Image (cartoon, rainbow, N blue to C red):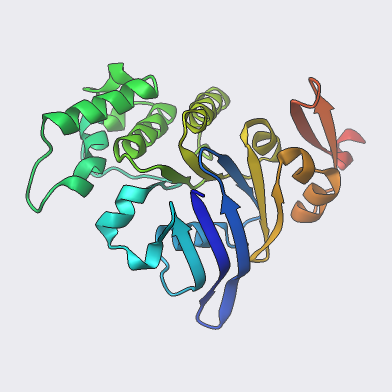
Amino acid sequence: MSIEITNLSFSYGRREVLHDVNVSIPDGTLVNVLGPNGVGKSTLFRCILGLNARYEGVVRVNGKDMRALSVKQRAREISYIPQSHAPVYDYEVLDVVLMSTGADLGMMRSPGPRHVERACAALERVGIAHLAHRTYTQISGGEQQLVLIARAIAQEARTIIMDEPTSALDYGNTVRVLSCVRQLAREGLSIVQSTHQPDQAFLYSDKTLVIDAGTVRAYGDPRDVITRELVSALYGVDVEVNSLYGDKVRVCVPVKEIAR
């Protein structure tokens, strides 16, 4: 298993945010995480990454207990793409990707030719090699997100966590980023990403994980998970879930808006 979560609970002080979460994510799987704001999705990610280490239960990534690993060891197993990234300096795209190769470097050492080759290969893999020497702050939001995906690939971890990777992107860039992510899963990487769009989760995910009030509400094939009853209860909006193209796509439509 890429990720194995057993009896995971986490609290901020006296406020319990996650309660008895149990999830197994197979290798080479794209999992989309659904859930309203404030139900524990980002906290779950931080526990998996080892950033919130004072949890109860066990989190294993690629068979390794994350709490038993150093930061450098964790970086060899799992990479993280946050919801937002605010660059401070005008680095070239290639330099941004190279930043992820430090897990196998010693203190005060610079990346060598093999690291540059790895970063270039990652940019090629997501289709933006032509941007290598462009300034990161002067490319589009969609291109920046692809750069961050390339950086995660260059880290050479088998598992990637992505926190709402398309939340600030337009429609075209959203499709490009999600298509890229799905292809990476087809090539063997395990990817867990959060989204607020059930339609998106159905179209792109191998499995859909629903978190509500800090617990697992549902987990499995999106055809079994994304239903009218669940989406309506989850978001407090009465919806119809319509199937298109032989159930390759499902679209959630608010019933109240149809009646107008």
